[in-house]
Image (cartoon, rainbow, N blue to C red; front, side, top):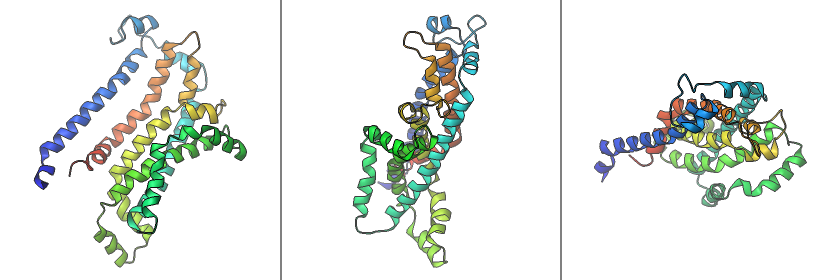
Length: 279
């Protein structure tokens, strides 16, 4: 049984399936990128063809730079995403460590309560959230989005990280306690480095919904100063006319941070996904 689990063929098959999935998932991104450098006619005439001397055009990027404050939108999205991921990883890791390390009355109920956030979409409480933000004066501020996205990402973070932290050797942690290390030192020095793949997985899974979200920015922070990249791109989409060159160019520029994140964390991401399935 153990030999079957440690078979290198199983690991290779899992990695190959993940690579194939990534290639399939990146195909729409490739289509968006090549069409962002085409004229409007070429986009509809040959959407899968590469731009050539006749179809090449930068009109979409020029429109994006002239209309709206694209760099402010990009900055807002970056601030919201980075700060939210920091809070999700920090508080999620702490809560996961407490649930996996310390046995107390109600431990299982607490874990189930936190896991409810995965099953119940946070958008159901949009009206109550809006009323809360109005009462606290946080409407049209980036903190409104940060707090909502942190609450949205914590259940999944606690669920994933607690499972990985249960696999950390108790002998290692007990040895640290014998040497006089505090619980905080054990957490930051011994446990966190061992669950880096899981934290990278949590970061990627939470970044994409935050970066691409339109619902909460439209409701909680629709002002020009707090618009995110996704909300700012909607200016090119009209009820009767849509500037497809500008839309595709804005989406291409918005995709870059996600692709950079995947490149940086791809190794840790694959390890985090496969470590629970392949031993």
